[in-house]
Amino acid sequence: MLAAVIEGPGAVVVRDTAPPRAAELALVRVTRAGICGTDRALAADGIAASPPRVLGHEMTGRVEVPAPGAAVPAGTPVVVNPAAFCGACRECRRGLPNLCARGGLLGRDLDGCFAEYVAVPESLLHPLPEGITADEAALLQVLSTCVHAQPSAAADSAVVLGLGVAGLLHVQLLRDRGVPAIVGVTRAAWKRDLALASGASVVVAPDDAAAAVAEATGGRGADVVIECAGAAGTLAQAIRLAGPAATVIMFGTARVADGLPVYAAYLAELMIRCPRASRPGDFDTAIRLCAERRVALAPLITGRYPLGEVAQALAASARPEHLKIVLDVAAR
Image (cartoon, rainbow, N blue to C red; front, side, top):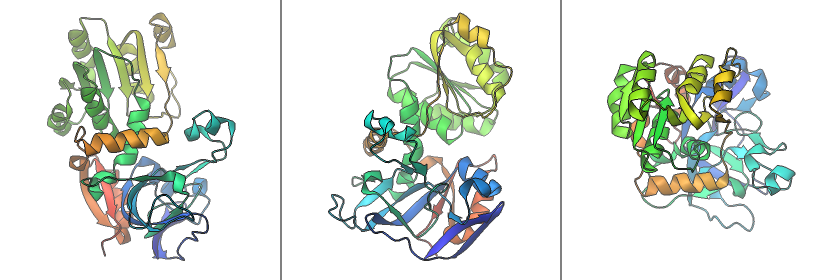
């Protein structure tokens, strides 16, 4: 089969490889695979993925060969949860498989989905109802992480810092929850109309965020602030934009965040949430939201490439004029 393989730092090669051995696993024929910043980082570093390693963790496809005694038959369209889990450890038994210490991520710890086939445990498969397109399904993994990140408590106001794919999905989820005041923050002027169509009440540049949030909340600060840029500066700004007892969500996963206004967080008694990946139930919710047309996924795709052009796709995904790049694995 054809696969995109990390062979070392900065070396991703598309070549013929042996198909994965299914054994007790389900064999899935990949149709679409999404590209994200994690893929670019793994491709550039090389070492973290223990090469040779098939790259990719956002995918949809159809079951080619079911797992033994399977509940998901051949031909079923599925989205695959890329966060493998053991099902037996303390975290898994507590309903936290996303924190499983024995688990791993497809495309980093296990061979991923930038390939014609991938073999995974049936527990990672989520069947798709009719009406969800392959393009939409390619974004369901990202949507599931946004579902997992957002608190279920009622909110009168929210801010989303950074309006890439995840930020725009967060805006849609906030709108679906009925949050009346949603402030989007981005440096990219071209994303304004898309963010407003997604449900934002107002979209401003970072320098104008404080004034916009003050106006939207009567000076109180926002009830929920979601940081999607993954930078120390935007995380600090998120804390400053939050109101008393607000929730700040570190969705962008900044690795280093020096200079945070921690005393401001203390004064406001903020809840700072650091969500990781998603759980099986989050996938089910994401699928339902898409099937019921409560979120729009396909408009976030701004480029498609065949598997053989994965290097070009990775490069395009880093350019600021793009949102989501997908690999059409079925294309030749």
